[in-house]
Length: 481
Ligand SMILES: *Cc1c(COP(=O)(O)O)cnc(C)c1O
Image (cartoon, rainbow, N blue to C red):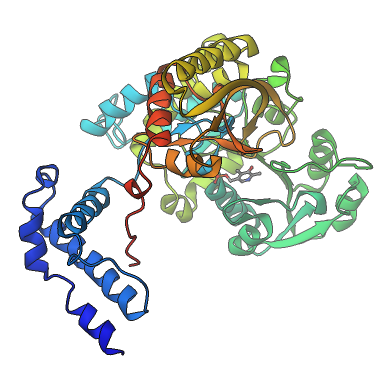
């Protein structure tokens, strides 16, 4: 170590001195003293590491008050809760990174009730005896989908694992090559299959699989024919997949199970809203598929959950599997799910009240009007900082639903005058309520389809603060833990 580095190290203040200096910062009064001390240590360690690595480090000797101001800002930022709301201006309605589906208002109040009170989660109020947590949604799911039985677990990946482990462990499961899906975030059909103990038998080719391929693959060890929805990709051109009805017939003849992972299961036929026809859960059940799995927080528009519907004999088998206990759904999710399912009892109500469906069905003209309003307000308040335009764009459903499908939409395009667009994008992530948009040619697009009317003022406020933010307002040293 050179002597200059060594002497610089000695100029790093003591923790006790920092504590004393920070006691003067009123905005830290709600931060527990223990936490302040912890943050100071992190900050000083980071500084020490940087010095030892020969990096330039600002020390308090030069500008004492500025240095402690920065330390205080770091402590304040560190003490903010990590999970926070954001405004989704990407136009992707179901964005896994942004939390997928928004819950309807009725679900929010139910979650509140169930979280703060005791409940009949596993108590049968008729008999006073132990009840089943699944009973609360089972009948609704059967009523809505036409299935004989239903079960819910933590998420759809868990649903697929549970079904494969129960029905296919130690046996063979036949899947078309064109359906060996990978969903972002490490869900891969072949890996889940391996974990379930089932042996994967691939049939057909990438683009074409025929009924005969399935038939030729069936042996005495075959337990399941598995179909997987091509959630996030499309095979176009010369293609063939086998129809559900044909697979069901084949499975019947050999007395094996047909299972379908629908991914983003939907109860409403969305072709009415300009989207391509996708099979609904009801149609899949009606085609005779034995076990159907789908997510709660994709097109259904509910909380994260994995839903299984199908024939009673198989669903009962899944319920008895000890793995089911490990994958079980929690009470807040269950409460939210029940309230969302209840909305589907009246489709027109569901379309209005379930944000995911309302965003898909939103008329382009309504999005245009809101985008125009935001543009106007931005022009009035931040004319010096940016050029704002109303532009045509396309939104996406996302969440592994309807790849390649675009919904015509309107965006507010912001071209900042004093900073680069990329910096605006970064600063918006540090705004009071962070805003996530889309960069397109040197400007930031804010697609108004996924921004609700009551978020508009917040959006404008965040935009203003991002455009006028001091660079070091968000650029505190990040301690590497
Ligand atoms: C999204 C998806 C899954 C995973 O569902 P999660 O609810 O995220 O666990 C599994 N299979 C398919 C086909 C999907 O689209």
